Image (cartoon, rainbow, N blue to C red; front, side, top):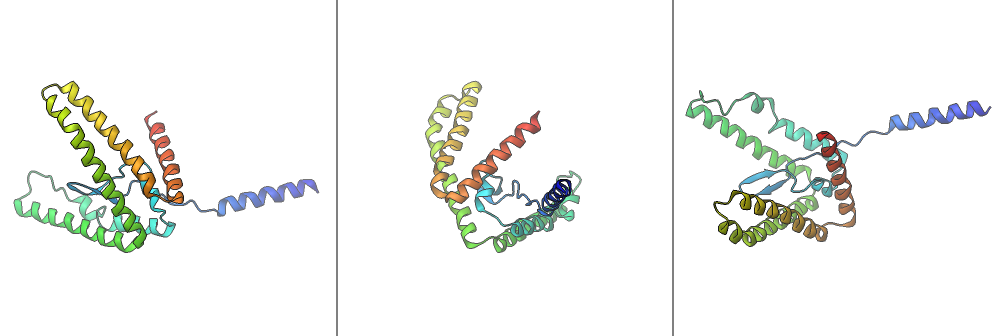
Length: 198
């Protein structure tokens, strides 16, 4: 009797585990923008998770990307081929611009108003932090011209400072649920990156 009960329990647990669908991941989808880059990767690991996207939204976003900027038409074209004529280059450039415009429209239609507003606020904060840090480090970079080692040191310090200041300001923008999702995704992405380097 105990054996039958144990087998039934094992079967039930196995069936319920198989029934649970794995949530698709959004990955490093380019929701963000930066100066001179309309579509930028996450400013920090896990940032996309702060949007609290639903499974349906994630699937729709992946489909939108496949239909636009990752389409076979764009991937098969070689825009950098030196043998292309100027007209062919312009046509290829036009296709890329249209794909990006179509993606922007599709993404806007998939996201909620709150998600779009959060993206705008985060983009603005990142731009503000980047500008302030650049202004602070500009005299150091100017005075160290010609000294490659010092330049590299200041650039590294600048990058670290931007990340640190941005994370600090991000805490004030996110709700507790958004912050928890961000922290969890950041930890997962950093662990995955560390494991891929091994």
